[in-house]
Image (cartoon, rainbow, N blue to C red; front, side, top):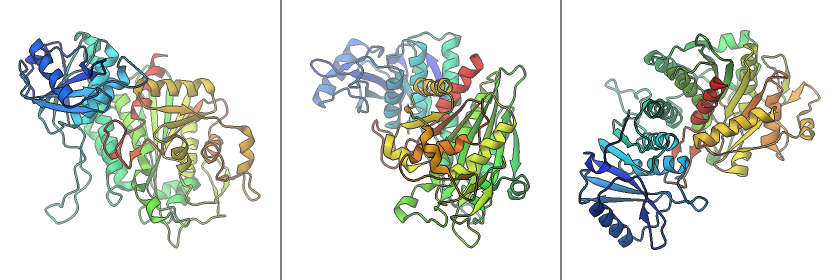
Length: 504
């Protein structure tokens, strides 16, 4: 994995394979952004090269320049920092620019980052973005016995040095250390979500979590319910979803409970390791990419571990609701009625709306531990992606807590938008044969899915629901140079939320 360090040395003196500096729009073309630390001759040279390349300085633009005079680094990478809505680059812009720049030189052994980092937030953002830019998925290989290898980790060993304009006192070093913990957590999520579904299924996901916990210094305990325990425990939702698969479901509970904890938070993640739609089979084109339907559970697992590794003074329990939704002779049917963990009877209308069923059981289990607040995160509805694209939707039963989640997302640099839960939509979930129908009609489908989930949260417990169907996975390259594949959306937001709750 990459390593992060911080320095106040002049960027020109750092012997690196690549040095990243920023550029802003200017009246006569792009200008180098403050904080680059380069001598005059290097600045003049780079300005001339940028002019010759018709550079703009826009966010997402990256230019590599070799043999820059007065600079020890072999290559200077100039990353655009200008956005139409902001003249001065904020932390989110710094984070994205660092990721774009480092991605272009991710094969290099040593990279220095000299973007405008005059305060703690921008130093942290530069470190976080640079770490993310190093990510690459290691493709499965054949083992010596001729079998396909098990899940592998991302393979970068890049040494990243962040040039700080805010000094390198303990708060700065702590921020960079935190960025390394967050970056490793996000890379793990990307590995899990990018993994092919023949390698990642409920049991192998469970084993991956066990291995990660065992290799960590974090004091996290695990409780695992297999298919027999799920039946015995009355988890009708997740059992019904997974009953046709040869790879049965699992419910994994991760617990981090330090001494002197300031409250408790429950995180619940949808973990459908592959979603065919079940009997209501998806079209072929809609089935592609359904390996990413477990991104919520991956984000929860990573957030619990990150919180533990950072030693946050708060109890965190993560619930991973893992199942594979397959067709077959044992598959769940439309009009089946199942009994959920909390005793609610639910009529199935569409087996391709399986996520809310596993989450309903997960939320019920989470409520039994009486947490102060509950958050669930899921690639839940295609309508979310239609409505908001790569922006997550945030709903909940408590406006103040929903605002806390949105604040955490904004601070983390993850786009999110509040959505309502109109009471007039509740009647769409009425059933003649059960307490609830598990799905309404297409109109307001993102909202009725959340209204269904709300039924499994005890009254008086603040709860927020993050629908991340859009931002969890990039089918095409992102707007700022992000590659295709898993984004690890949600890890940074959940960690920021946990940190805020720990400080409260």
